[in-house]
Length: 240
Image 1 (tube, rainbow, N blue to C red):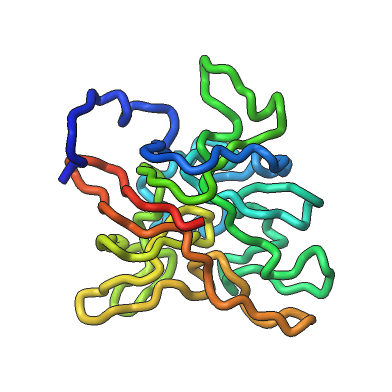
Image 2 (cartoon, rainbow, N blue to C red):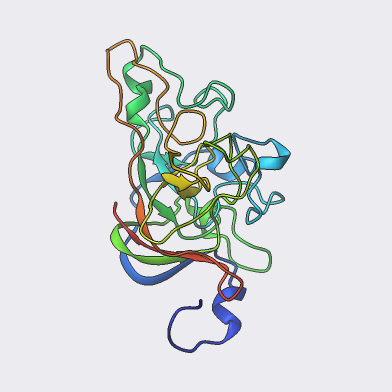
């Protein structure tokens, strides 16, 4: 079903995937990493059958509706996407553990969702490359997004890799390995399955040298309305 109320098709024809319904904070304090402008999409899990049907693979850089992460590998106050082959692996899954204080697995944390594509759009001003800033929404709020994972990045219970991801009202949303929203749990047709596992979601693989093991992924939002043919967006209340 579509949301209540009336609107033109304009909101679905926007160049931004993230739609602000009840906005929290438009945060511009962080500096974008270099790969925030150059990462391919999807940046990590690129198996053809797993690529979300909603991702524009021709656009480089972090996308509107993708997750903004702290990036201690780049320095103080840097933010970016899930790019960086030295940080993430699609095969082993999760963030590579290291012994350096600036590269602790649990130091890569989701902050919110990017409002616009970092590189901008054709025939528009490009404030991102000009300023090095990428506004993201933080501190709660309600949003709709046309960018989210639609395919299983790996097998989840009876759901094979590449199968359609089911979205159910009330399910917690976390960051996938690609930095896109996805459900933390799914119904595979026979049983409830935990989808918040290494190799699928953005989390550490094992204890690092300091003995730290983050407890799974951060809950980014709670799904209120799955996408359907009437409204091809998910709507959610943000939790970070």
